[in-house]
Length: 565
Image 1 (spheres, rainbow, N blue to C red):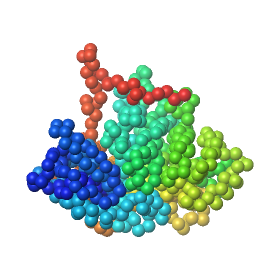
Image 2 (image 1 turned 180 degrees about the vertical axis):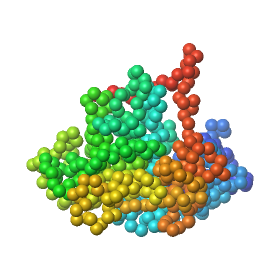
Image 3 (image 1 turned 30 degrees about the vertical axis):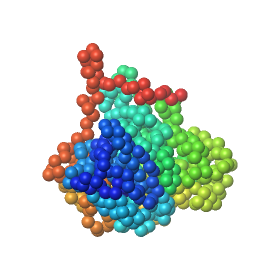
Image 4 (image 1 turned 90 degrees about the vertical axis):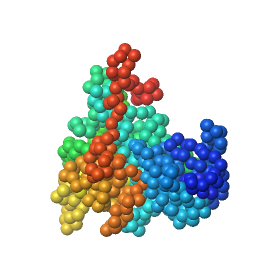
């Protein structure tokens, strides 16, 4: 979520004065005001009409985003004590989001203008935020704009958990609960700014009982596929102006709490088969990746309704379509995921660059590309030469925001990712087991064996820059021996929210409600009085039908997934 501010066009937000001539209620937000001077920054003008009295209130939205807009959707309101207050909601924006920028219920427009002027614009530094300089001078102390963007991408990854149907009693177990056009709106997540353009589905030749979910129904939506993520693109002028470019997002589903998948997927390193330099031949030091991750990414089944194409083919085809659709525009490709989803984000980010799908086309026609076919040997040399001589300004930046990601490949994989210009920011909790595997014994830290490490089939290497957080530093979290708490994505976002830099005190000026940590865990201190595992589906999805029986709610026609030819 961006650290931005909405500016209401009244000269004062002091609720105790009588100078305001009308009262307007916007969902859960009660504001009083009249039109006044607006902040002299790029803005979008909106009008809201009170349905009771018919009065109109003008709101000028600045480039920097927004306690007020988030208040409307997240249950925050202006209280009688002249401060932003919070209501219970699944996703909240706490009071101090505004207060830390000097904006309160009594702040004048002139105060807001002064504070906004001191905030760097994302549009002016977006390439740095996306890792152009490997996040130099942005991680310690942690840049507030980068922090907000990390949390934004983390929320996209969290959505893949929240919207997944885990219930084996459901006919739709293993699917997404909502149609792509509804998903962001249902969860109140940037639905005005991004549009989901493609759902991704995966199957695997490997046995993954703790990751793949199957329905017990006699007539399930699918017997061998699971929804595993989505592709989205920023579409609103508002967001594109704020970002400084049009952003394509790829979010991958991972694992919520179970760690058994590590055993299921950790087989051995194998040639990726995605590197055209090694097509049809085997060389020492070639790019190798974890067999289980690769299987999940590349497996397809002719008998599977949703995996006649592999997850890889679905993704690459959609990215090619979007880059062709928006060619000539400033674009970025941002991939995110947690746990196993982080591994898939890294693997697919590498694949996109290796396939050359991030090369800017300008006005030239898009080259024909079939991800289901390997590159022919006669074209390998030309492809490699092309990648070597393409200026970085002629490539669409590819950035991976990895949360709790395991190692994916060997050091040749790491080197190839770096050479292709893919930027990777790994957010890790130092107490989390998953980022330490595979390769506990032989990994990138053992530099003294670098001369022969590539020839050992079980050596692994992390990729990119690390941003390390520690759950012991948060005053909101209790001591725990449960490894799933250290691995929880909501806990990760909480730790980033309060992180200011190495050795610096954990910040209490949080943009996200700490209660979200306990959505799928029991990690908060007891005195906060937030129950563990509080997120529950209402009545587990059962509704009373006209015949009086309790049954699962039927999916609306537009929510029933179409068959994939």
